[in-house]
Length: 177
Ligand SMILES: *[C@@H]1O[C@H](CO)[C@@H](O)[C@H](O)[C@H]1NC(C)=O
Ligand SMILES: *[C@@H]1O[C@H](CO)[C@@H](O)[C@H](O)[C@H]1NC(C)=O
Ligand SMILES: *[C@@H]1O[C@H](CO)[C@@H](O)[C@H](O)[C@H]1NC(C)=O
Image 1 (cartoon, rainbow, N blue to C red):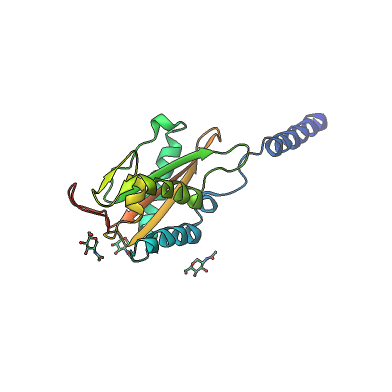
Image 2: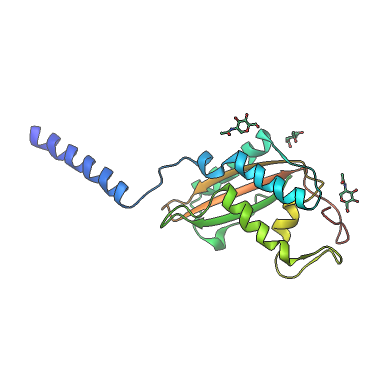
């Protein structure tokens, strides 16, 4: 009986070491989101085009995290199964690999969406390529933001979901600012 206990302890130690060796997540979702930094980056980008800053919205963040939790539970773990929550907010989603190091977070997502700025032509209000994430970031109709995150079931990807309130509305002629 004591030998059974002994091997159980060994197994436990072994699996802890394996976890360390493979670099499985050490951080909690809120650390992936990094609310303050994410807001700061958005506000720098908005200031560039004269748009008022966003504030963090806990209600919106709870909504985003709830959606993230449902995605995690459903085992969403590839780019093709990424989808929008279909809720009452504007929404940007990004995903990045966990390995070899965390390649996605709220700030990384914000900086990635910002790269679409060059695709947006203010004069015609059109995108050359993708720019919808950028135009949401700088939309002057939105004044608050909340984000959530999840890591997919086998720890391959980190997802970031940011929701914006109010959702910008208008037609093709409505500029974000
Ligand atoms: C984040 O920002 C809030 C509001 O400005 C502040 O109260 C809080 O201390 C900040 N947290 C961190 C970790 O910087
Ligand atoms: C935060 O979001 C809630 C729900 O959408 C909204 O009612 C509230 O006015 C928002 N607060 C701020 C500061 O934007
Ligand atoms: C937001 O941008 C639109 C389009 O340029 C503009 O008509 C509107 O006045 C702006 N609103 C604010 C609050 O700046």
